[in-house]
Length: 305
Image (tube, rainbow, N blue to C red; front, side, top):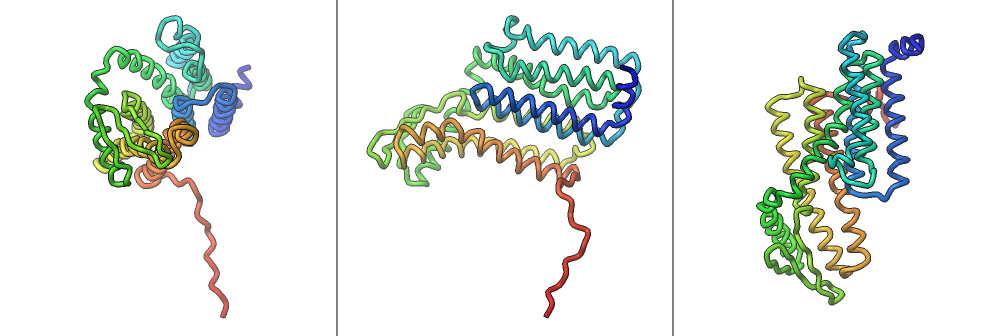
């Protein structure tokens, strides 16, 4: 056992890649065997970012030395795995057992693995999904009893959405948080802007990714990075408005059933995921200095005349 641990500890990058493949494979299987939802796409996005940070940091100094501090992290890892099975009975998360609880287990396994190998700097990024799920669990419980948090956002979202719909020629009418207009099929369309439509979960997911990135790359924290993050929050809100307007357009052209229902289910994670990819690609390449695609070393040959 010690020989195996010693062998793995000598190749940090290989361990990080094995861990990434294991996480994405098990998460993929879990998602395919469950009913897909917006929350599962959020969780997968957080895991992808966590694994990317693990791979990046595996090329740095990981503090490869097993000491008493690692025993503490081992205990923490085992407790994290235990929370995965008791979070529902304790009311931290909601039944049934879903990708949230599975993320708690997987994150705990990661902490145990990297603590056992002495990779202390990899413990934080692999713990982020656990922190995210626990944070969302507490946040969800808070929101259930505190509707006033999202209440101020609803009229703002409604007003902006109605303005864009008028610009696009839908001729909507708003009554409180209800937006109504006639579709080209002759059927009336009613959109109710409620708490889930404020983009509060997307903002939460974006906040978690900000925590992951800033804690993993503290050298990238500058005035420019803070401006970029502010733009990221603005873009996240715009992505949510785009989602609402896209649902309205689907209803306007195709009526209240069929395509509109499909767009309502899928457009949110498509728009938000696209925005996250674009924003963080720009941030990593321009602010952190990470290159994802290697440029060719050879010079292009000129056309012969």
